[in-house]
Length: 280
Image (cartoon, rainbow, N blue to C red; front, top):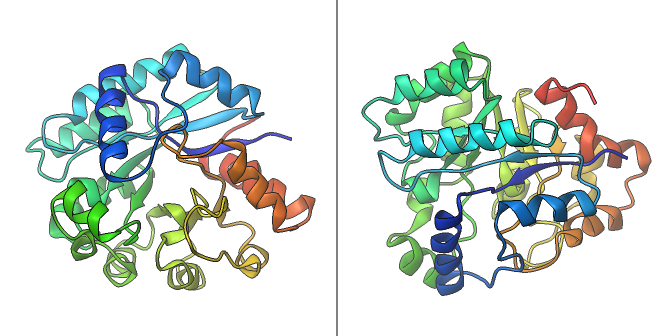
């Protein structure tokens, strides 16, 4: 069976060093403290056939470097890595950055992390980003759920309460305004998973990914009925390598739901193949 991990983070070495330090200070220990050349073989050994690589700038002025690096990574691993681009809402040259993402690099999508970039999904600074994603028919994966927002993690790690810029109500304002845009909300919208799943009924261009919700790491319950009701709208993702357990735990969590081969295959690969326009 093909497996597409729709939520991985492949970074330059120095950025990994900084990210790992941050996670270990404010969140959780990292299971895979390795660089890209060692990480890709691990994914392949686990049976992954393609991965979507995501990155995000934590301040203006970083996106161009990260996008160039991601493009080069995709050139090195053209049959495995599917890079997405990024932009910061306070970049002065947002439109030029996005044109480069979609025209020069031909990225299939964009990643926004509301917590890290300190922007809410309904912030007016996002409008030009949404419009260009619509114009170029690109996917927007946006971490806009409130979680994780443990008090110590959120305030000390980010320096502010991340619930101020996230949540299902703020996201729905954006998806109402840009209904043609293909949105993906990761982590099933953790910590408001039921509310995000409920949005699938009214917004046909909305998708969710499973990232970190299936290994029982967070004290939340995933409802099997969500997958049975919306089998075409959920994607498999892991957050590899920035996770505190083995990659296989996410896949094992999916298998424990006993969804049957047809739905499990959709979640693991078919939905991603269709959304990304791949031929495997």
